Image 1: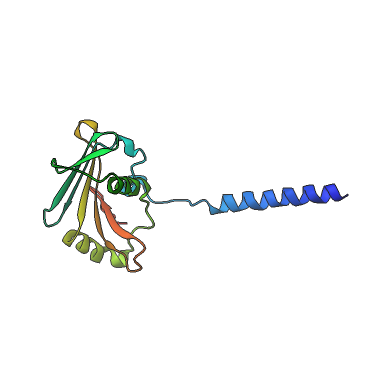
Image 2 (image 1 turned 120 degrees about the horizontal axis):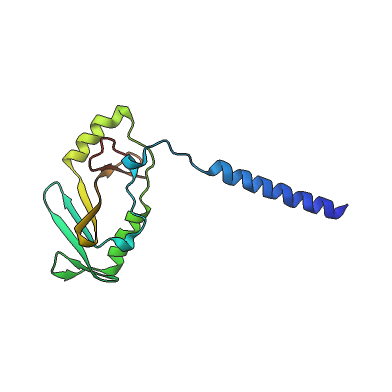
Length: 152
Protein backbone atom coordinates (compact mmCIF):
# COMPACT_ATOMS: atom_id res chain seq x y z
CA UNK A 1 0.00 0.00 0.00
CA UNK A 2 2.83 2.38 0.90
CA UNK A 3 4.61 1.67 -2.43
CA UNK A 4 1.44 2.60 -4.34
CA UNK A 5 1.29 5.99 -2.60
CA UNK A 6 4.93 6.72 -3.45
CA UNK A 7 4.41 5.75 -7.10
CA UNK A 8 1.22 7.83 -7.22
CA UNK A 9 3.06 10.87 -5.79
CA UNK A 10 5.90 10.47 -8.29
CA UNK A 11 3.45 10.19 -11.21
CA UNK A 12 1.53 13.22 -9.95
CA UNK A 13 4.74 15.25 -9.60
CA UNK A 14 5.76 14.30 -13.15
CA UNK A 15 2.35 15.32 -14.48
CA UNK A 16 2.56 18.69 -12.73
CA UNK A 17 6.07 19.21 -14.11
CA UNK A 18 4.96 18.23 -17.65
CA UNK A 19 2.00 20.60 -17.41
CA UNK A 20 4.26 23.42 -16.28
CA UNK A 21 6.60 22.84 -19.22
CA UNK A 22 3.73 22.66 -21.70
CA UNK A 23 2.00 25.85 -20.55
CA UNK A 24 5.20 27.87 -20.08
CA UNK A 25 6.16 27.58 -23.76
CA UNK A 26 5.55 30.84 -25.57
CA UNK A 27 3.59 30.87 -28.78
CA UNK A 28 4.57 33.60 -31.17
CA UNK A 29 2.31 35.28 -33.73
CA UNK A 30 4.96 37.75 -34.91
CA UNK A 31 6.28 37.10 -38.42
CA UNK A 32 9.82 35.76 -38.12
CA UNK A 33 11.16 37.76 -41.08
CA UNK A 34 10.15 41.00 -39.33
CA UNK A 35 11.57 40.12 -35.93
CA UNK A 36 14.56 37.86 -36.58
CA UNK A 37 17.36 39.95 -35.08
CA UNK A 38 19.51 37.15 -33.63
CA UNK A 39 22.32 35.33 -35.41
CA UNK A 40 22.41 31.77 -34.07
CA UNK A 41 25.88 30.83 -35.33
CA UNK A 42 28.15 33.72 -34.42
CA UNK A 43 31.12 31.64 -35.54
CA UNK A 44 30.16 32.49 -39.13
CA UNK A 45 30.42 36.23 -38.45
CA UNK A 46 33.56 37.64 -40.07
CA UNK A 47 32.84 41.36 -39.96
CA UNK A 48 30.73 43.78 -37.91
CA UNK A 49 30.16 47.36 -39.05
CA UNK A 50 28.53 49.81 -36.66
CA UNK A 51 27.67 53.38 -37.61
CA UNK A 52 25.57 55.99 -35.83
CA UNK A 53 23.46 58.77 -37.30
CA UNK A 54 26.40 61.18 -36.94
CA UNK A 55 28.49 58.97 -39.29
CA UNK A 56 30.85 57.77 -36.55
CA UNK A 57 31.74 54.19 -37.38
CA UNK A 58 33.51 51.11 -36.11
CA UNK A 59 34.65 48.17 -38.23
CA UNK A 60 35.47 44.88 -36.51
CA UNK A 61 37.04 42.17 -38.68
CA UNK A 62 37.97 38.64 -37.65
CA UNK A 63 41.66 38.01 -38.36
CA UNK A 64 42.04 34.59 -36.71
CA UNK A 65 39.78 32.49 -34.49
CA UNK A 66 39.24 34.55 -31.35
CA UNK A 67 41.12 37.59 -32.71
CA UNK A 68 39.51 40.72 -34.11
CA UNK A 69 40.88 43.85 -35.73
CA UNK A 70 39.38 47.27 -34.97
CA UNK A 71 39.21 49.79 -37.85
CA UNK A 72 42.12 48.07 -39.59
CA UNK A 73 44.58 49.49 -37.04
CA UNK A 74 44.17 47.97 -33.61
CA UNK A 75 43.58 44.57 -32.07
CA UNK A 76 40.15 44.54 -30.44
CA UNK A 77 39.70 43.33 -26.87
CA UNK A 78 38.54 39.72 -27.03
CA UNK A 79 36.24 40.07 -24.01
CA UNK A 80 34.44 43.07 -25.50
CA UNK A 81 33.97 41.34 -28.86
CA UNK A 82 32.69 38.22 -27.08
CA UNK A 83 30.08 40.29 -25.22
CA UNK A 84 28.95 41.84 -28.52
CA UNK A 85 28.75 38.43 -30.26
CA UNK A 86 26.90 36.95 -27.30
CA UNK A 87 24.40 39.82 -27.41
CA UNK A 88 23.89 39.34 -31.16
CA UNK A 89 23.20 35.65 -30.54
CA UNK A 90 20.78 36.18 -27.63
CA UNK A 91 18.81 39.24 -28.81
CA UNK A 92 15.10 38.43 -28.73
CA UNK A 93 11.91 40.28 -29.50
CA UNK A 94 9.63 41.08 -26.61
CA UNK A 95 6.76 42.71 -28.49
CA UNK A 96 6.07 44.96 -31.46
CA UNK A 97 5.75 48.67 -30.74
CA UNK A 98 2.12 49.53 -29.92
CA UNK A 99 0.22 51.56 -32.53
CA UNK A 100 -0.13 54.44 -30.07
CA UNK A 101 3.67 54.81 -29.80
CA UNK A 102 4.58 53.75 -33.35
CA UNK A 103 5.14 57.21 -34.91
CA UNK A 104 7.10 58.45 -31.90
CA UNK A 105 9.40 55.42 -31.82
CA UNK A 106 10.09 55.52 -35.57
CA UNK A 107 10.94 59.24 -35.38
CA UNK A 108 13.26 58.66 -32.43
CA UNK A 109 15.03 55.74 -34.13
CA UNK A 110 15.47 57.87 -37.26
CA UNK A 111 16.89 60.74 -35.20
CA UNK A 112 19.26 58.72 -33.01
CA UNK A 113 20.34 55.17 -33.78
CA UNK A 114 23.22 52.80 -34.34
CA UNK A 115 23.07 50.72 -37.49
CA UNK A 116 24.64 47.27 -37.25
CA UNK A 117 25.66 45.32 -40.34
CA UNK A 118 26.70 41.71 -39.80
CA UNK A 119 28.72 39.96 -42.50
CA UNK A 120 29.89 36.40 -43.08
CA UNK A 121 32.84 35.27 -45.16
CA UNK A 122 33.14 36.96 -48.54
CA UNK A 123 31.34 40.12 -47.39
CA UNK A 124 27.93 38.41 -47.51
CA UNK A 125 25.46 40.48 -45.49
CA UNK A 126 23.76 38.29 -42.86
CA UNK A 127 21.67 40.94 -41.09
CA UNK A 128 21.35 44.67 -40.83
CA UNK A 129 19.31 46.52 -38.22
CA UNK A 130 18.93 49.77 -36.34
CA UNK A 131 19.25 49.97 -32.57
CA UNK A 132 17.41 52.89 -31.04
CA UNK A 133 16.77 54.13 -27.53
CA UNK A 134 15.65 52.18 -24.44
CA UNK A 135 11.97 51.75 -23.67
CA UNK A 136 10.32 53.60 -20.78
CA UNK A 137 10.95 50.77 -18.31
CA UNK A 138 14.62 50.52 -19.37
CA UNK A 139 14.31 46.75 -19.74
CA UNK A 140 14.52 46.72 -23.53
CA UNK A 141 15.67 48.67 -26.56
CA UNK A 142 13.71 49.66 -29.64
CA UNK A 143 15.08 48.02 -32.77
CA UNK A 144 14.15 47.91 -36.44
CA UNK A 145 15.37 45.42 -39.05
CA UNK A 146 16.46 47.03 -42.28
CA UNK A 147 13.70 46.79 -44.92
CA UNK A 148 11.10 46.19 -42.22
CA UNK A 149 8.28 48.54 -41.35
CA UNK A 150 7.70 47.22 -37.83
CA UNK A 151 9.91 48.30 -34.91
CA UNK A 152 10.16 46.07 -31.84
